[in-house]
Length: 280
Image 1: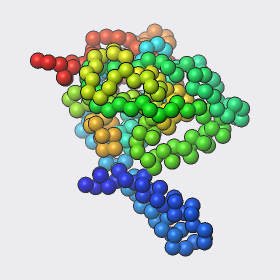
Image 2: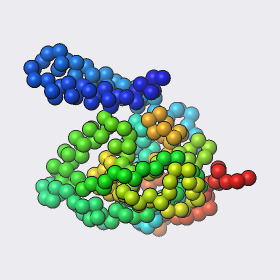
Image 3: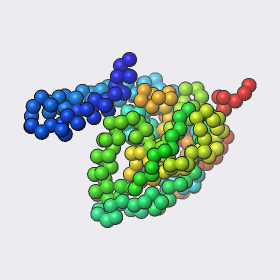
Image 4: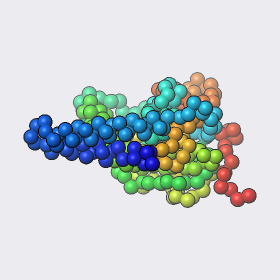
């Protein structure tokens, strides 16, 4: 019951922001109401985030295949810090990844670039294990990158506004796979119109699912990937995972690459998991 209430924190904060913005008489009842609603909304979000912290007796990392091909760069991953993003929306062990080289950020010009300017855009994404599609959406546009100082301020403001709405406004086009045993994989910021699967489809490890895009709360084309212990991203908790990958020096590793390091997938039987939906 409480978690259902906490999910509405965005509506409460949005109502507070409206009260403050439309108030034209200085500090008064409407302004105070808006501030109160903003405060209550922040408390509700904080309670939701605390509820999504992983338990102390966590399960071991889940061995998966890397959901991309070729050489990628890890960003905002759990090998460098935990939570890698935030506990909110089960992002405790999430990781971002992008292809390099890519256009460098600039101070002023150009303020933004088309997503096609980035090598990640349109790259195929693959199922990390056997499973079933339980959520899929790909109707949101792929927006321009936020590649300048002005773009940085814009994406921060935009991210706040997106957080007031439903999770899909942050995730953009996305997929959720049920991998069995209470494990769910999330792919976010997918390219519009690139989904190759639909809800209810069973997939096998390595099957193409979609393409990397720049939808939702994204500063440049990249893949946001995470595991969680339930299908509802607003109540699930993040899960750890491990990949088999090779670094630029040729060394093979099992784990998750550290931030700003390059990696290439290594395919092995150890990364495959049995299809929980296969006929007996």
